Amino acid sequence: MRGSLLPLLTSLALAMPAATGIAEDIHARHGSEPQIRAPGYAALKFEPPKPGTYRLPPLGPAPDGPLLDSSGAPVRLQDLYGEKMVVLSFIYTSCADVNGCPLASYVLKQVQNRLMRDPLLADTARLVSLSFDPRVDTPEVMAAYGKLFRRDGFDWRFLTCESETVLAPILDRYDQFVLRDYDEDGNYLGTISHILRVFLIDRDGQIRNIYSPSFLHPDLLMADMRTLSLETR
Image 1 (tube, rainbow, N blue to C red):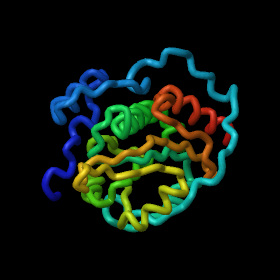
Image 2: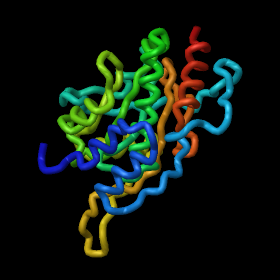
Image 3: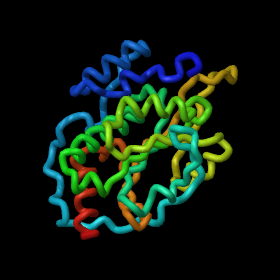
């Protein structure tokens, strides 16, 4: 693993139960005080709709694309769809925005914990974290990152891509905006501007919901996943 490829491993693991702990750790590493705005770190301030009392209309098929798993083996996104419902998040492991990639990994970790307390539902679900920074997030890096989040026996895949060239059309198909940040002299700053988007995909490979930071919360994800599960039954 070259240099400090995962400068936020501890903070991104989000083992601390309180959002203030996450913010303090990122502050210590980066010297700036992060402001937590996303509701996903705290208790939901309203009662989510009861599963099965509403529908999630299909938003279109989830696009395919060639990727690499955390062992370096080739895998296609379509290979991960169909058998189970999928929660797909686009992240990069060195993201320091507490309202961005760390939020996605934190929420998915909470979803994982809840699913593991419901074995019937857990067997119908798969989590997928896909990096949009293949320069840094090699399969080795994604494997190390995954160890901080995935619990033994749970189906959570950590993926990357062979190159930015191969990844670009996948990001475009998912309408995932990604832009590397440079200073006025053209030096890469090590950060990526992006819009956090997390996708819920059903067993037919159809996108059923898209979550932004304002709506990415484990309570809402679990309600939607249970709704899809009831629909399948």
